[in-house]
Amino acid sequence: MNGKGIKTRQENELLENNKLIAEFMRVVFHDDENQYYNAGGLHIGNTLQYHTSWDWLMPVIERCLVGEAEQSEEISITTIKNIYEGICNQEISFAYKSVVEFIKWYNEQNRFICGVCGDHVNEYTYNEDKDVDECNKCK
Ligand SMILES: [Zn+2]
Image (cartoon, rainbow, N blue to C red; front, side, top):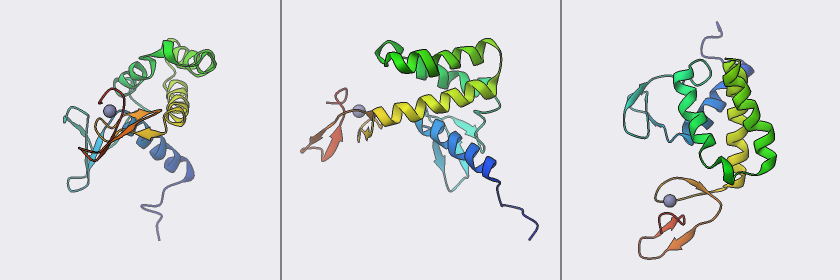
């Protein structure tokens, strides 16, 4: 064994975190092609680069900050402040770490996944006609 294909704990964590972000961004992985596509169906490559590229990370940050006013004060003064700090200091690893923290928190608050739009939501209702769980927006 030469260790090829075996990932270190750190690499695994990075991969897990990138997958978490990808899910948050509705990025889809096509198994057959081994490629990622964004929510708009655009091909974005075969690796996730949120940890190395501001071009990748900035849209995620924008999405985190949408509806910031609705977020709890606690997350605003900690994680969101850290995201801003990462941007200001051009420290992508710090911003990245804070984004991951935010998404973990966000997913915890919004434990349900809408069967129509795929959004993480804090409540949904079952639609008998369509046999699907819908969020309030999709109702
Ligand atoms: Zn929905």
